[in-house]
Length: 134
Length: 134
DNA sequence: ACCGTGTTTGACAATCATTCTCATCTGAGT
DNA sequence: ACTCAGATGAGAATGATTGTCAAACACGGT
Ligand SMILES: [Zn+2]
Ligand SMILES: [Zn+2]
Ligand SMILES: [Zn+2]
Ligand SMILES: [Zn+2]
Image 1 (tube, rainbow over the protein chains, first blue to last red):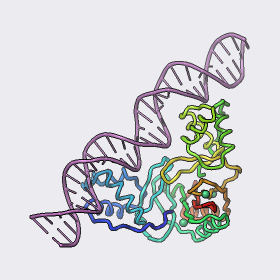
Image 2 (image 1 turned 60 degrees about the vertical axis):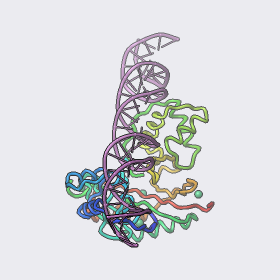
Image 3 (image 1 turned 180 degrees about the horizontal axis):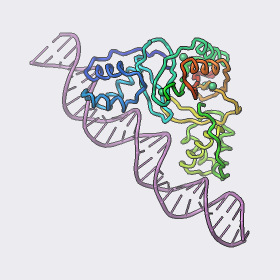
């Protein structure tokens, strides 16, 4: 993940947000807004598509979910186990995701940035591969 | 940069591709297809938008240009100085870009993947910051 | 220089994820 | 119950990217 923790505004609790949060809590793959929307539909918790987008954005801004982009540009979301900064190793076949930490990489990124005189540095680091079940 | 070197098919030389290649050779920031298209226009080398997209894709597939996505999902392209695998430190204000290498990071990525039994691993690693002129 | 053929191009339509609009609904405090 | 700012949803709008397909082109052979 990459964004500096823009602080969470006070968001009002709603049925829709709860349903979305619950769904995400049960899910471990990265899913798109559209995917999540239709899963909510089929499960009975009807939520408007725009609302799904809005809440995912809010959750992402609050750091409650991680976001990344698939190769074809779609945003995919996932509720990660840890709150700590981390990255992901994602199976491009089945979506299975492992959360990884890399202190060494974090240091490297910061160092490279400093060496070049850049400030406010953020980074995007994600790994994609094929997991054992293929 | 993330894709395994899918080998270049034989592409036929055209005025359009030449113009695009030349423009990219003179440019050092990452630019979108749309940007490149309008730059070509104003410079007199008129090239269809679809053609710009097609050629950028081809060039990217051949590894002649690097691609990455801005935060708002647009693809941006840049003709890098080196052919070697590398990553980028991009100023989010002015687009100034520094090419960086990170043997340590490459090793880390490979190691993490192996440790988790993933194969065919690729990675996305980009750094964003604000450069000295801001 | 002249064809024949497979590529490439370009104008325009079509996709499709995401965002916007705005009228309606809801949560929380009074 | 009353109020009102925040939240929702149906549908329209946006905008980058891709698809279509006829016309233009590169190039090897003649
Ligand atoms: Zn898998
Ligand atoms: Zn990190
Ligand atoms: Zn690398
Ligand atoms: Zn700058």
